[in-house]
Image 1 (cartoon, helix red, strand yellow):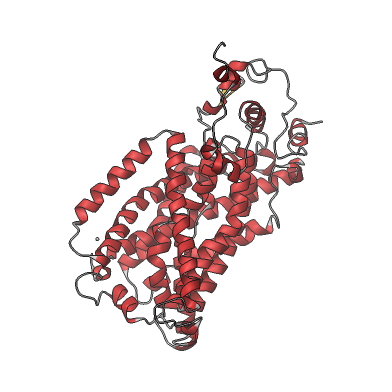
Image 2 (image 1 turned 45 degrees about the horizontal axis):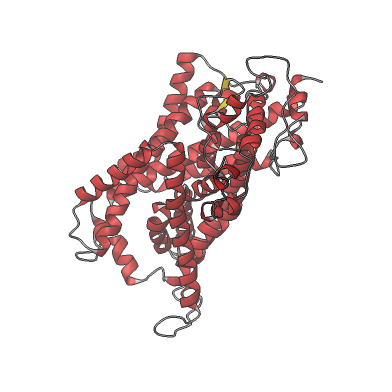
Length: 497
């Protein structure tokens, strides 16, 4: 039996865990775990071999909420109103639904790769190892800039939301407060960060369900006017809005406007991939997080779009005035400069996110080809993606189409500023990829060159050791664990001991 076949053979036990791999004797890495090494597993030390200096401290509940909270944010609450104004309720819902189906294709690729190989660096490291080091270099910088640009976007968006309600809050104070909070959260260790993310993300989930409950109660008549308006706004002024042009072309462009908003608003696979290496039981907890992402795309994103279209008409005077800047005083921030900057940041962030998804799909295609070439049985992996490799191909083609076309308005008429805010990240990606390839002389890997075993033995050994000292626990069981009464040990109950 070959080394790869031996690795695969032990990756599919009857339970949710991963059986240890039968390896050649190497005392420094694959000896029987001592009590000291087992007690040190959460720092990433497995049987005397430190795996990237990791601190595997994120539990199931934290991973699940990071997966949810990382995708639900200011983008959803702030930008969806402008998308409704441009597209209409049905276009908005269809755009979010279609885009999330395509995002599920990408999630399907990352779920298989990250669950099998939950390494530090996530999809960035996978691209370097399984595709091309130049691609990994490019997407690493792309993701760094994505997260860096996200900070001023969040601060700008918070300032705009506050200015809608009152105009006497100094923007400088909002900036300082946000920066201090960001710094404090990032200074925490892995466990502290995970705990803070759990509670903050939980708040986002509560807000979403409040929106769902409010929508249902008011649409069936639970409002001060006792008006059961239902889907009235879908009939008057109608399900589709005209944007930029009239008639069918205008309605199609309205749909595209909502689709570009969905492209920026709906995210998720990248965050799960990046925290995979910090999970206590990566192949169990990360697999569950990726699996829950499918219904999360439908419920949270498409559901929010549906609710907004039910509650507000796309030609509502207040909605139009807010985004056109026609209101005076509070609410006029949409026409301010702290708003133009927001639009530029959204354009940059949209392209950056799409580039990440393109790289994920490409990496999976290379991984799939290597599995075929090397006889790697994917059915024995912890998670096997469905409809592959067509899921990756469809996801790739869709994301390429979006990043190519989403800035088409800069050409009609030609506008230099709009063009560069839409396509700067694309140009930056091409430049960094080409520069690193010329400097390092890298090339795309052939299917027979991919190291499909890689860190799998160490990860398998880690999970087996982790099961001994800290067995995996379900989400709901872990959620109520802090509230359970603590049982006294035998030594605490016996005063003579």
